[in-house]
Every structure is written in structure tokens, then in C-alpha cells.
Length: 202
Ligand SMILES: C[S@@+](CC[C@H](N)C(=O)[O-])C[C@H]1O[C@@H](n2cnc3c(N)ncnc32)[C@H](O)[C@@H]1O
Image (cartoon, rainbow, N blue to C red; front, side, top):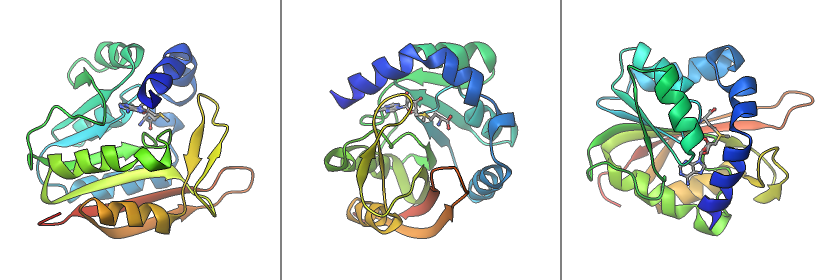
């Protein structure tokens, strides 16, 4: 249901999203540094989970990583395939990745969990945990806040999370949090990212 609402909302605004945010020139240099540094330590395939226009997937592929993108929105997947023909993009949900258990080295979930209702966020987190090999890492980008609360995101309602609360969810789904990053810039929503490592056992 939430998946369907997100799909429909992003499909309606895909062209606008691509225009505004769908290229590496729109990316903050600190984000570029964070994602590049994280990816350097990943061994094995990287899934860009919720790849949208595909620019991050392509960036990772250009850095020499075996990266592929998955997204719920056909308009994004088609755009990504046409724009980055050398990179693999598939239509799919974060709730059920096309990946063997323990087969993936890293998962980038860059602002792709933001629309999950808090009580459902463990569904994709458990799926990430299943797909990652022990020691594999997850990098999650999200909007930070004092409490878990809904806000009116431009595309469809989203949730901001305190770093500790999302950390608790990660802990409960088989991860140890390794790093947390918060960026507060005047006039912008606070942004955060967590790097978490898949434990040997859930
Ligand atoms: C805010 S956009 C971020 C896109 C891209 N990661 C970026 O940084 O530009 C959120 C993306 O997550 C995707 N998404 C949201 N829920 C999803 C789900 N359940 N399964 C797959 N993709 C999902 C949306 O289609 C959208 O492309």
C-alpha cells in the first residue's frame, strides 16, 4: 500500500525529480565524499536500493564497483537504463530484492527509506540484512529530526528519524552501527546518514 502510494507519487513527478536532482552536479560534495569513502571499503556487489534516476549507481560503477540499481518506479528505471546504458537497473521493491541470501557486499539506501511508515521500516531493513553477506555494509541517507514524525515531503509524505531511533531499528534487524553523520544547514532540513555493518548472525 505504501509502496503503491510512493510509486504513483514518484511516477507523477519523475521528470521534475530527474530535472532537479537526477545528476551528480546536484549532489553535495560532502555526500559525494561520504558515499565514495563508504564504497571503497565494500567488497563485492553494491545494490543502489531505490536508485531513482540512477546517477548514484552510475557514479559507483564509474568508480569501478559492481553496482546495480533497483527502483519501484518504471519511469525512473527506464530513464536510468537509457541514460546509463552500461549499468544494470531493474524494477523492484526494497521489500524483496532480487539477490541471494548473503550475496551482496554493500547496499546504498540513499533517501529511499524515507517514505516507509515507521512500523514497516523493518521490512526493507530485514531484507537488506538477508541480502548482505556478514560484514557487508549498508549506507542509509535520511532526514534527521528530534522524533520519528511525518512531514510533507514534496513528492509524498515522508518521515524524519532521530539517529538513535533508526540505529535501534538497524540493531534489531541484524546490524551494528559503525558511523553516524548529521548535517544541519540553515534553511534546509537536517540530513543524516548511518553506516551499519551486517552482523555475523541476526
Ligand atoms: C527521494 S528518492 C531518492 C532517489 C535516489 N536514491 C537519489 O538519491 O536521488 C526515493 C527513491 O526511492 C524509491 N523507492 C521508495 N520506496 C521504494 C520501495 N519500496 N522499493 C523500491 N524503491 C523505492 C523511489 O521510487 C525513489 O526513486
